[in-house]
Image 1: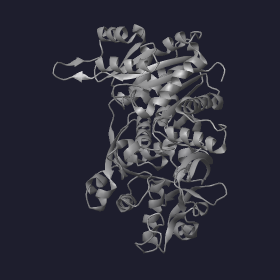
Image 2: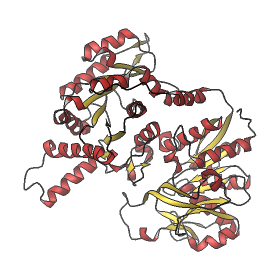
Image 3: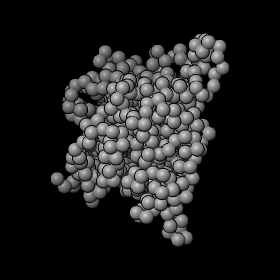
Image 4: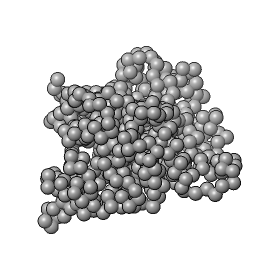
Length: 541
């Protein structure tokens, strides 16, 4: 798009250094100045998308409005900048090569030899341009996954190198995010790994315009000057970013360091007035303020890796911040519950949450937690699989049969209260074949869900194959299950609640993907308020 400015983020020294959060925070700085911002993640892995990857490998799969299954960094982007992204905003090596090979098979290249340069790099550049075309953004921020020097990332780095020539220096800016290790013996931060990382980047033709120096401690001015000198970057463009206890402090740190002002000046744009950060400062203040604690048990099968439930944890924090409590998450492994372990974590919890997931491992442990929540009147929130298992747990009592199940876990069950969607039964492939993306839901009046949303029709993001089996709707609702939300045509059950329970709500969709730090999701807010009441915690005004 003509006039669009591009900022490319690369990483050095080590992975998981906070490149995604830095990019997201930079996007927030630009949005606060009135610019329209879009952001893209380039993932070097050969999978087409993370949809079929184990959460242990990749963390959570984040889903967009259009059904794209994406890297969890897109969650950071949407939460920090408060925008809605599309499928163009995540591109992988698998997608790039699949497209180029498909074109070659069609004969689009007229018999030419297909090479990384120019065919692969051209496809990468085309996908970057798609973000600008589909969003009409003033700024497109592009994060290159991995670390400089990774063999799989080389085509992406070559593509963004070429874009400076294609788009012009006045339209492109490179930000390199590196790590300053601390030597324990003498307490000294070392810049040498950053120097080597920048040298590696320059060897492929990219000279960073800005360096974000991450560290676990404060970085003094002499060290910043040294990085500027040895890496040939302006001193004011070497930005220290120490680790902070509150993630949402990062935009404020970058604002104070003059990052946005430097970007605007460097790209030849007219200066903008300083934004009003009052609301954001208040958000951070509320996070840091002492407050009472409530304990919520998050019962999952991947809890050893907290990134597998990144958006759920963030949504709980958002709701807690605005309710005036500290949400302490008790990470309960569902397979341990099956063995009789961690039962005290369930009994001591002020609320219980069962998130989404796939596969039979740990299912009975989740059902144990749901049974406890129902029988002991503990506030409960179920998400996707959590909703399906709430139905299974209740149906086992209503039908007096412990063999009641979902056909995902027991294909031959005689009581399939959860079953495959009809249009899913003929599908054999796994990738991108579920019910994905934004779908409408009609809310039933006089329910917890209606009180939470305050409107009759909502739109939420989905990621699942199996559905509530309507053959059991009449029997289960007669016994106390409430259908609190369904598709507008009445065919698909979207939200269920339990009659007579103070708060037992579960939804087929993933509300966590639409929660924001300054606007928590209504269902999470309602859940946390119910937890506060159950715990008997006093919250100051």
